Image 1 (cartoon, rainbow, N blue to C red):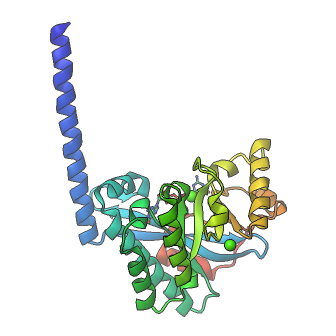
Image 2: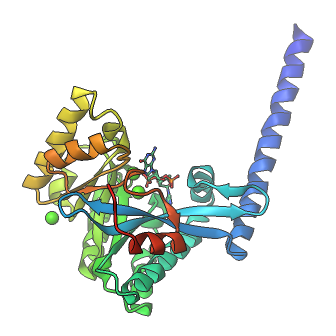
Image 3: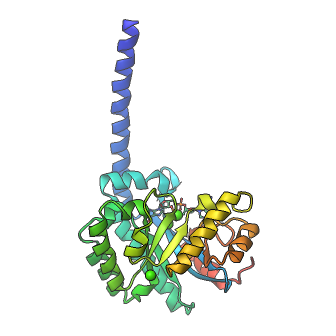
Length: 279
Ligand code: C2E
Ligand code: CA
Ligand code: CA
Ligand code: CA
């Protein structure tokens, strides 16, 4: 039994080393990816339920790795956050998304916004405001067309500092939305104190909307609260016509999900904008 134990221990040490070596290796690959511009920004439409038109898009990063092909963000954003690489990656995403938004405007599209996800690490970074202001002014972009998506867990920990940063972003003219709303274990008091424009209801509440009365109760309550607080509401993960028609009855403002369009590369999104929507 003793020998067995020792072997187990050795095995454990060995695999812990292997794990940290693999991590370091991935970190280096991420650094290279940044240097060789292997990241892409894909765009998923946001749909105005009342008007039946596309009003903007969410920017979602992808890593086109020569070695692993197309890597979804869930597989590299956590490591990018741990290593701080999220700061240059996030800045690249912001700039790329704003540039693409300018392209839509120049092509004579009706005004469209672009939403960019911010991670906590970026948010607490001192240069954040300067970086964003610089990007918007370099591109001569109407700041109103840039929306920043924040999660509740990002907003809550340091409420006073957060409030100052959010106010500063509003002064610059950006839109602010709460991503994955309803999943963050946080008190709702921030909604009255913080200058938020939009709630994005997490897709876990939408998935069974047509079959689960608890979900429809929660979604109608969120929409009613948002209307009173003068916030707009986006339902995430809308996949079926049945979900969309319920959301329309509930007076939800916007829908995002596979029904209206999956995330797609920039050129494909531009073609998507040219075509009439058939829902
Ligand atoms: P998120 O911000 O909640 O983005 C929505 C995710 O839901 C996207 O996954 C999107 O492809 C997926 N989705 C959209 N519609 C549907 C639907 O109808 N059904 C289902 N099942 N899924 C749908 P994606 O692109 O893999 O991104 C995952 C997460 O990675 C994002 O979740 C966001 O938290 C993070 N992320 C993506 N891009 C960035 C970025 O540039 N910066 C940061 N910090 N995080 C990012
Ligand atoms: Ca998001
Ligand atoms: Ca979300
Ligand atoms: Ca408001």
